[in-house]
Length: 63
View 1 (cartoon, rainbow, N blue to C red):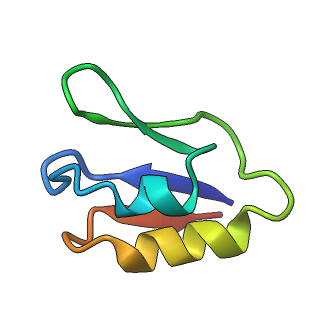
View 2 (view 1 turned 90 degrees about the vertical axis):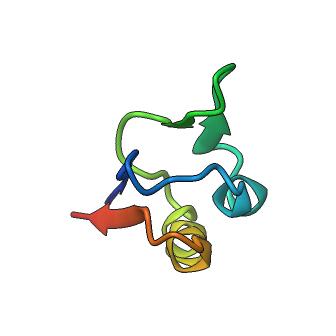
């Protein structure tokens, strides 16, 4: 499973980073960065919480 972001919707509220900082981070321009690659074991449930917590609906999961 992978997580993605629609940068046109993301307003960098940081909810996802507080849930899963190993995957989500902001760069120096406050643009959301997502670690490349598949989610590690144990990260899928947290990623689902992070996606659900995004107030802008900018995150999505894919298989």
